[in-house]
Length: 112
Image (cartoon, rainbow, N blue to C red; front, side, top):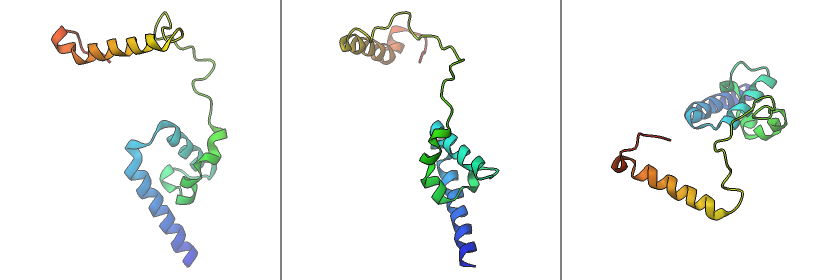
């Protein structure tokens, strides 16, 4: 009876934690939770107990590499200003911040 109550309590705690933090879970942690649930034969991450949630690092070696080698990503810039010096990175970020800050005054179209 005590073991059954503990298991029910663990499931309830895990559900509560998962519900409270569902919007704040990082992608990698969510993937680890899904791997843990599937390896335990559970239908959902909501069924994970608190012990499993605390030991998600054991499932890290099961994660697939991201991005896959078959996916070819475009470079964000034709040149790589960050290779030569940290000063160029600083200048790039200062220009970016200036444009973001004064976009309305300069009449720039919204961008990210």
